[in-house]
Length: 126
Image (tube, rainbow, N blue to C red):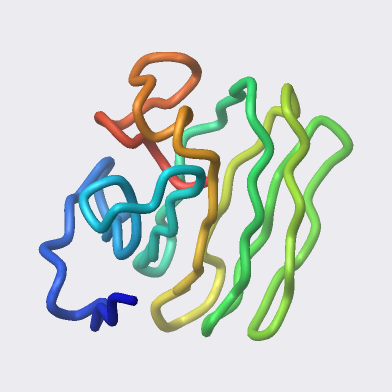
């Protein structure tokens, strides 16, 4: 078992105002999933993107929207989101404070840069 305090993990600014911390992943010995914590500053968004894998998102704090082909859906504290493989999406902070989310993806998504994952090796939120 490993315990990680997310504040002890160095954040990566994938796009302006969007910070990613990989708290559980291959470096901790997790073979199948990667858990990331994203912080989006007010008014900031992840890129509108798509990839081949599903992921699950849980909003820890803040307010925002998730945009998809069907429009925008409000999200806030304690909201869970399932993004299906191949579903275009982005997250935008529409609140006055930080939008903080947990995002879980399969390990192959974390290790496969460039496959619909803008913003660096592990890519943008969601």
